[in-house]
Image 1: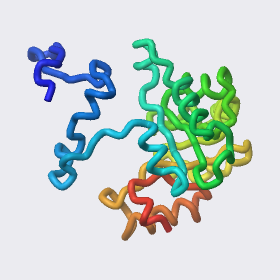
Image 2: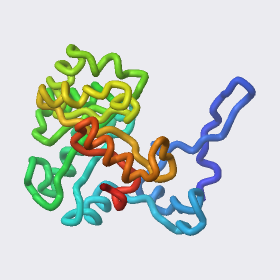
Image 3: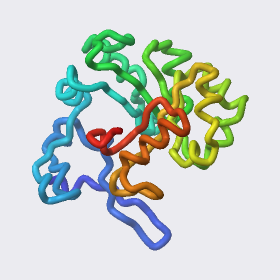
Image 4: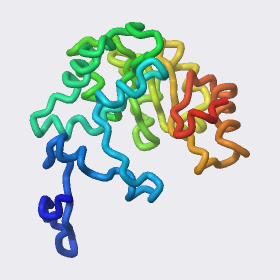
Length: 220
């Protein structure tokens, strides 16, 4: 639809054409087919705005919001954290329990973003720090957990972090941090018969407070 709106990105072997989201307006993005590339049965699916998502989910489920690479958009002049809170406030969802049928939680891999939300903007909404295996040493130690508690209300580690350190949820919860590991998928189950069994094991054996899954309909 926008064949000429690419950038030439240099690589080791030459250059590659890339179309970047930040080069398009929301109106332009709304014209794109966001589903056909994934599977023909999703042809015609449109990109949803944050407001579209709130409208579709409100009253039926909670909003587990992940801020994706906010630091990159910050360099482009976009204050993702303030914009997110402003949109939630517009919908009356910026305080815990404002709508009991639509609980809100914000998460991100970007530490500075979580610190900004918790320490600078002082949101009272739950904040969970996402981190993977490569960063576990910084957060599962006693010092790391204490640091996380200064700006976050919970941790969302890669599930292998919990598997490799079975007591991490206990230590985190002793400081008042909830633990919700990621990501449980029916298409990528190892060591269990089903993803439901896998999720149930993490809740029962490791004491996590919840799980992040691609299959909420299969929750135990």
